[in-house]
Length: 79
Image (cartoon, rainbow, N blue to C red; front, side, top):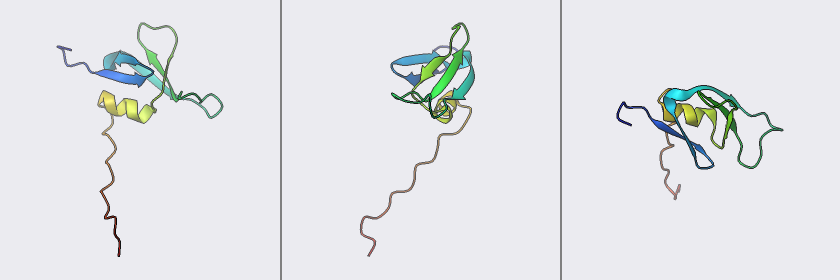
């Protein structure tokens, strides 16, 4: 986007503008299943959108949290 707004991938083929997301809620254990992980409230959409990604991953894509560091590669032969 020309104004620098990021598109955030929610999974299930869904993308939303990062500046339109106003709330994230992780789904409780009984509500999860079939890849469903997070409710995402988006300005202009009356119902929450279900995302297959964690709230932390979505926040990282929005630029709110830094992405998690990848662990360093380890040697296969320890001895």
